[in-house]
Image (tube, rainbow, N blue to C red; front, side):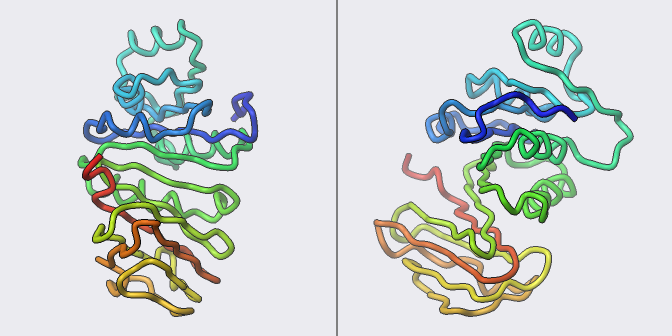
Length: 226
């Protein structure tokens, strides 16, 4: 795949399928970003007032007229086979990685097929994206991928729920700040629920760091009060 030409110091916004996105997210997205729509993510782009630089996927969820329209407006279109070994979001993430961006913000609606929802979350934690800061807005929830050497800074309101979910194996050396139930150089095994339903305690925010493994750091009600 040929990567889109773009500033490598800018972030990428990757739009994926799902239910309708919340319009408030538009004000929380990075400016001057590379915009990539994954198939039905094109509808999310329209809802947020974004013109994609690149549209990728098998495009089985996009009407031919819509494809022609965005192509005419300057969007590059890369159609992939329906029978393929990657979901459309993974193809879009690879395109962002190939463009050399240091950060990716994924935007997707909540709901839809359970298997696809799980796959969309797990693909964010793939090791080939380890050098990229990855965040996501899914419905009204925000999440970020924390890795060894890549901590996550939290902003929010006191009492807001924060959950730590290990993926791909155990996570170790976890240290938190600004949370009601702190962790100090501790481990969470994959599948454990110990990290679920923690709370922010400090209006200045908090942080999560670790020395091994991968965590999804989730604020399920991040848009509440905005």
